[in-house]
Image (cartoon, rainbow, N blue to C red; front, top):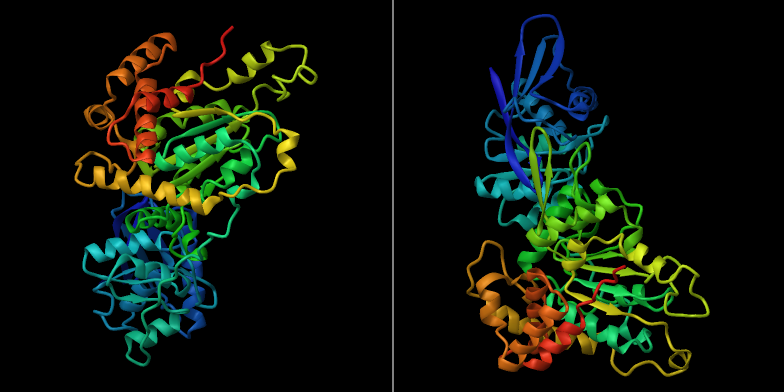
Length: 506
């Protein structure tokens, strides 16, 4: 007799069904796991043996073979412990033969038979939902699984509780979903004095989902502005929250905080490695750009990042996904991000201050800014200078307008965009002006005649690329939406062009 238990293997945020086959046969006592298991899966036989012993069940002196089918798919992670243990119980007739027919199972076992949390429970629950099955998972993951929909979720704390449930001695209640605490009481724009031009650029970037680069000396407030961006962005829509939660589940952080309601803000250090930024590693995991999905990725001190890491952002910024290529598999993670970056104009940071600038100016600025490649520079919609704060501004009272007032205007502009693109069919969802491209962009952002003439003239004089030309149109469309204007006009084009920084050359 061969016992069967269904579980899953993960490829990015997607799942592949895995059939755990358990056979007890005559022969010399042994315990073998086959089907391309990694080290964690191979070691599960010791955890399973100890967990079964802890509940008073000893394995018979037989040849035990565990096959993880399909055999040519690499199996990674500790979530195979519980399926293997339950498969053995089926083979030993400890639990009814049909107890697991309608369930997908995953969980890690402790030596004392308690169940430890595992990553990827939400995508596993969604896969079970598609198959009209329930899910068996550890208790700490139960609140995560119920967000997949109206499926049966069994989330016991230990193996004995699950056995008693299947034997009808105790009934496990369905867990309750947990929503992450709302973090609206974050940094407020009222904390920033002066920098009105930078605040305007930040508001436009938030309204249209545009990428933003701030250039200025140390202490000008670039990081403060970026940290206040999440407070003015609209909350996640239900579909966006589910997309983000899938990534967080695979990364193993969803169970700690509950279903997200606010847009993520990721701020990696400039020493971050390329796999940590875009995803990958020996065991592929989501990178910072995927953990920032539907939110903000802030890169402070942009030129200090590894050149290879920065260049790896070019494709995700265009396609809104990160593809990790390996010899045996291609893993795709969602990565729809709003990139916000900050940098000094030169290494010393005081290029425009004659009293503090180094003797190598302007060569030091040329060398420092050259660390950012032209293609990456071109993918940033808005470039804004953030000058040093005027000492007189610091003595002024706080601004009357804070994050709440700005967020209301941004919500109104986003509502216009939502209505505009609600019925548009595209290869990827269009939610903001930053997502629009091709013929649709030329249609919704067509400027009036004076605006078209200004844009044509500026394209020649500023030597804008085709990408830069389209990004000017996107920003202009957002500025028009903020004013409630149905058509892009000359003044909107003019302001959008002011945010296209001309790179120094020399």
